[in-house]
Length: 97
Image 1: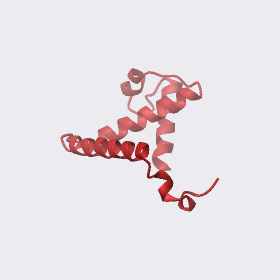
Image 2 (image 1 turned 120 degrees about the vertical axis):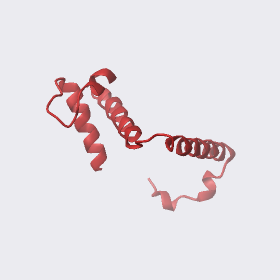
Image 3 (image 1 turned 120 degrees about the horizontal axis):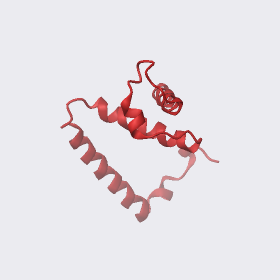
Image 4 (image 1 turned 90 degrees about the vertical axis):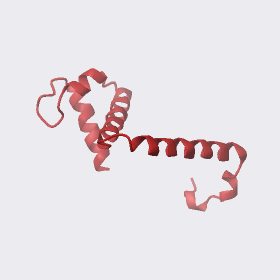
């Protein structure tokens, strides 16, 4: 496998890639505009991290619900579900990396 820098940039300058790049750029611009309306933007970021941790944990057969995750304060020992606790630990690991 070649490092990304060793690949010829022209290889990616094809209509399909450029169309998707344009769509992604527009979507990011819309998100950037929408996030300014949120008073506490870290809420959105934390929610995305929890969702990623929940989905990744499900691959390892650690199943929990959104209700279970948002019902408890992760900063206390109040998390009663082992699966929810595992998801929060996974989210913390993502934030460190």
